[in-house]
Amino acid sequence: MEQSELVRLVVRAFESLDIPYMITGSHASAYYGEPRFTRDIDIVVEIQKEQVNDFVRFFTPNEFYCDKDMIETEIKRRGQFNIIHAASGLKIDIILTKETPFSKTEFSRRRRSKVFSDQETNFASPEDVIIKKMEFYRDGGSEKHLRDITGILKISGDAVDRNYISEWAKRLELTDIWNAVQKRLV
Image 1: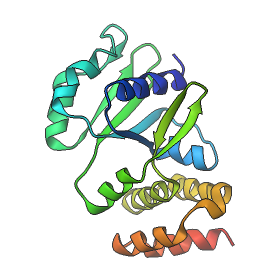
Image 2 (image 1 turned 45 degrees about the horizontal axis):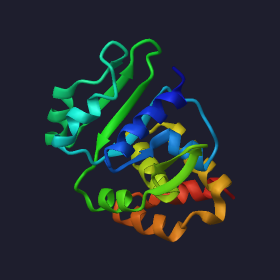
Image 3 (image 1 turned 180 degrees about the vertical axis):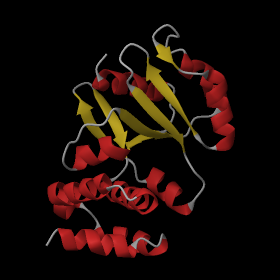
Image 4 (image 1 turned 120 degrees about the vertical axis):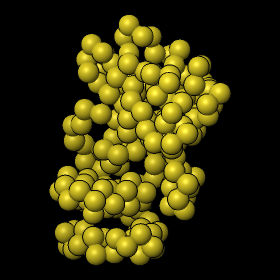
């Protein structure tokens, strides 16, 4: 199984069950910016306990790791769970929505895009991907997040609402990182 096939399968499961979701992380930054390889896919989701049985049916146990009990536990914790394709080792991280003001705003701003010829997909907005990448950089220091951010800004340029980013950077205490990123672009 190719990575794109796994994404398509998970998106179809969410779409068919009317489960709100959005692709975020490196796949979203590559969509808006410069591509880079990553083995896992991050998807933020608002799944309810009563949807779990139908959801796990999309992932046959002999082909996928998709633990129903873990999903139900993570729904209560607002944590995350994984879907792993056994033969290829490909993994999708399913992250439950959080109750923070930024997370609520981010999820409400998701965008539909036609990535596959026959299917639209929800992505986090480029601005929200940038903000999350700044948080990840602050928390872990990995340069890959800054490269992802500059890639989005170079490719998507004027389509990115920098005022929105500046406002959230201030609220989330990311202004120093945001200023440093903008200096990289000069």
